[in-house]
Length: 154
Image (cartoon, rainbow, N blue to C red; front, side):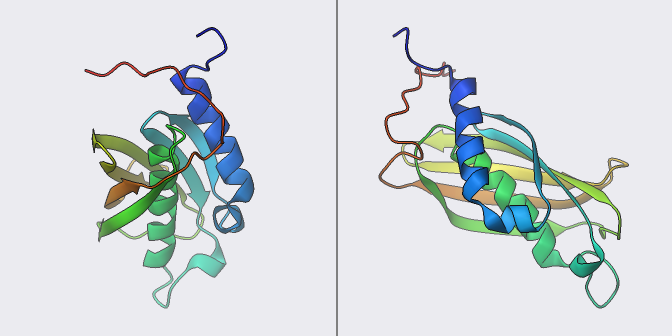
């Protein structure tokens, strides 16, 4: 298939389309650093309006960053995929001005179900939170008609 896009090209197109429609991630100032099949890396700077009563980054903001990275990672195959369940463990506080990076990595993909781990770190490399998301593919493509080549599987 000479007209098919590589899996990497598909992941990049999906990220562009999804981010253009993702007003929540945009409103929080998130930026996509990298995407690949089953992988995404997003960053966000902690603003004053993201601080809780202890003057640290609100846990909901950390969850939102991790959840967005999860969404871009698991939808990168052009199959509409949603969260089936998620959990997060907070390890250290995010502070005003911190640049937080959420790196999502696919751990397993079997049929319509997947498991993804997201690690949030600050600009010094300190681990802020660990997130595990379980995904479920539903019917439909993110971009109808986009045809990826079959990705190599181990």
